[in-house]
Every structure is written in structure tokens, then in C-alpha cells.
Image (cartoon, rainbow, N blue to C red; front, side):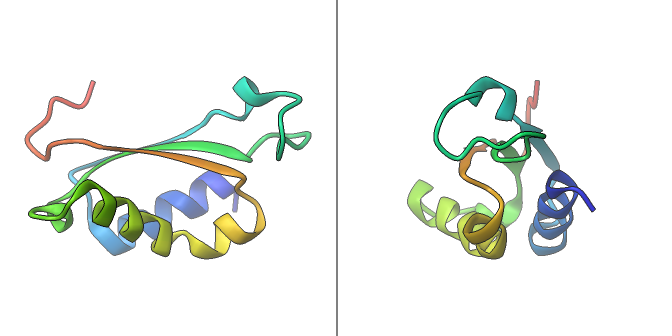
Length: 91
């Protein structure tokens, strides 16, 4: 399973998001720290879920980071998180 697929599966299982987009942005970081041949090192997560209702931005990000802890310790060098409103728009 690719890193992207693993991130998607874990976030879906944990948060049952109304919207989820996991984007591999590794190509934008060629030659930077943590970049590896083949990519799958730098990701952006765009997520909308009711699980984040009433939580601060910091708390929302902590939940995502805790959910992806194993990947962040091993294969993922950088993760950007965009929390979106559940009622969209998601474009």
C-alpha cells in the first residue's frame, strides 16, 4: 500500500470525513530536506469532519498528527493540514 493510501485509510477510519483529499506534494520539494527518490515524503491533507467541531485549530491538527504518528516517524517528512468546514465548499 502506498503512503498516500495508508494516510487516506487511517484518516477515513478515524474521522469518517465528509471530505478528504490527501495530496502528495513531494515533487515541490525536490532536493529539500527529507525528500527521497520516488516521492511520498511531503503531503497535504485537506479534511472536513464533524469530529473537529468545537476544537481549536491546534487540537484539530494534534488529532491528525496523532492518527498519523507512525507514518510521520518513518516515511513522511512533512505534513500540511487544511481543515475545511463540513458544509463545504471543498474546491
